[in-house]
Length: 225
Figure 1 (cartoon, rainbow, N blue to C red):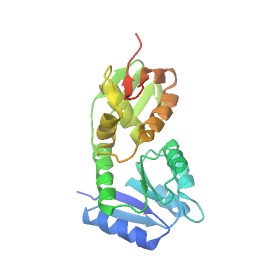
Figure 2 (spheres, one colour; figure 1 turned 60 degrees about the vertical axis):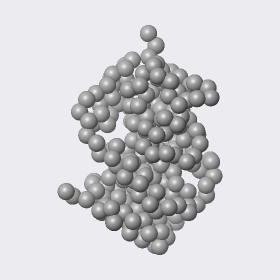
Figure 3 (cartoon, rainbow, N blue to C red; figure 1 turned 90 degrees about the vertical axis):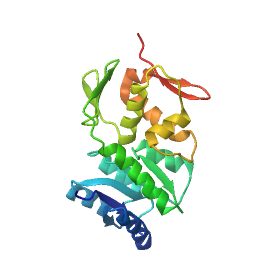
Figure 4 (cartoon, rainbow, N blue to C red; figure 1 turned 180 degrees about the horizontal axis):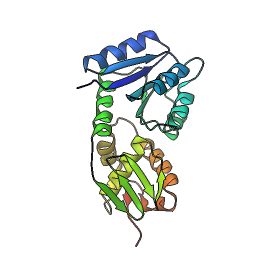
C-alpha cells in the first residue's frame, strides 16, 4: 500500500526533523517546506498530499496566508502549530478552516495521534448519503448541498454536520461532540466547537437554524416541521 503523504511546514529545521522522524516511524511519507510560499507551491505540485501540518510564524508568507490560499481550492485537513497560544490566533485559524490547532511546545506522540485520528476519518470511504431538511450529505464524496446548491465545508465542518444530522433530535454535549468528531479527548475548552458551529451555521444559510444551542450543555440538530 502506498504511503500517505504529509506536508510539514515550519521555518525551523529542527522542528521539521522532529515531526518528520515521528511521522516516518508510522510509515507516512513526509514532505517539507520552510515557509508559506514554498508550502503553497509544494501543495499544488503534488495532488496526493493527504494532510498538512502548518506553522504560523514564518518568513515570506505566514501560515494563515498559506492556509487562506490553499482553502480557496482544497479542503485537505490542516493542523496548525503555533507558539503564540492566544485565543484570537486560534479563532482566526478555525475561521480559515483549520481542522486542529496545537500550541508549542507539544508532544510529538500526541501530534501523531491527532494526525492518525484525522486521517482515519478523512480516508474512510462511505457510500451512503444523508438528507435532512434540504441538506444532503454525500459521505463518499465528502460533499454537502443545501437546496440543490453545493456548499464548501472544511473537513471538520463536514464531520460536525454529519454527526449532527446522524443524531437528529438528540441533545449533544460538547464533550460528546469533541469525542466523536475530533476522535480523541480534546484538552481545550468549548470555543473549538462553538467557532465551528458558528461558521457552519453561516454556510448553511437558513438551514443553519436547525442547529439549536442548548445553553450550558451543547447543541441539538432539529429540522423544523
